[in-house]
Each structure stands twice: as C-alpha cells, then as structure tokens.
Length: 200
Image (cartoon, rainbow, N blue to C red; front, side, top):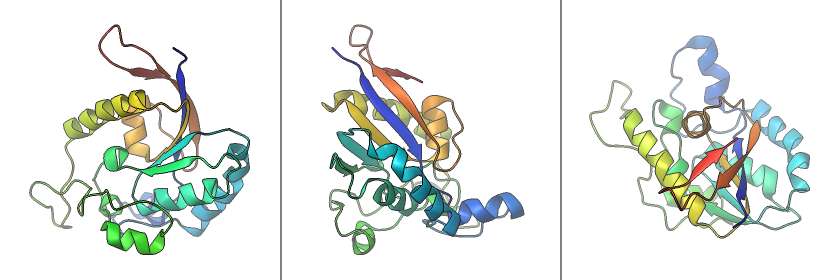
C-alpha cells in the first residue's frame, strides 16, 4: 500500500507569541488570534502550498490555526476538504490554548463545519491555577498524539495538510517548528507490527 504523505504546518505568529517571549508573563490572550506579523507570515507562505495537490486539510479549532488554514487554503486550486478536529489541539498551558464555543467560532468562520465539536473541546479538567487555567498533563498529550497517528492512518486521503501547534507538533515529530514553518512526513503502513508511525 502506498505511504501517506502529510505536511505539518504550524500556525502564524499569534498575539500571545508576540508578547510572551518578551515579558515571560501570560498576557491572558484567550484563544489568541494571529498578530499582524502572523497574518503576513500566512500571506508569504500561501504560494508554496498552492501547487501541492492536497486531498485534505486537518485543522485545530483554535482561532490562530483556523485563520492560518483560511489564509493558506481558501481558493486552493485542489479544493481540499477542510476538517476541523480537536484531537491535535494545542496542549493547554497558557491562556492562548483555551478555546471558544463552536457557536462563537462559527460567527468568525461561517464556511467551516464546526457543529460536531463539543462545547468544551479543549482540556478543562482538574484544578485551575491562579489564571483560571487547567494545565493539561503531558501524559494526556502523549495519548492524544498516539490517537492522532491512528486517525491519520485511518484516512483514505494520501496528501494531507495538518495545521496545528508548536507543542503538539513537538510531541508528534520531535521538531520545534517556528511560526508558519512546515515539515513533510510520511506515515508508513505498519499494520504488521501493531500501529502507525511517522517519520520526517
């Protein structure tokens, strides 16, 4: 069976990304949007994806990822299906990683199918810290990574773009991606040894 090829694309710079490295303090930008630089990064990156015949785009429901997806793939010549799934959402560590209700997201992204998302699709279990944030345990992220690999392996499409987040992609690939950076992966068929794996 031919291998699946997919490209991990980290979202453009968010307003959180712009501030936090400077101050070291969470600016409380819940579900942070793209910054002006982030929008520019998306515009500059768009051309490199237009020639690739993607079958499917899988995107996180966090707004910065949805904005990146819209900027990169709206009007794409291959008209790939766009699937929003919370499985590869970012690890909840800061305000930017806390999402919004699907009904709120639908107001900003009316062309996307969002009704299948739970009202609270981000991690919200446990005792909140002083910011009101329930930090997601690393073990839960690792479990999501394995589930996400199985999800990708189950898809019939062969060329898949995955728009997501730095920490999740680091767990998935071992690589630290800059904003709007992308890497290509091959998802190998490992049905004989119990599960999928991917390699850069």
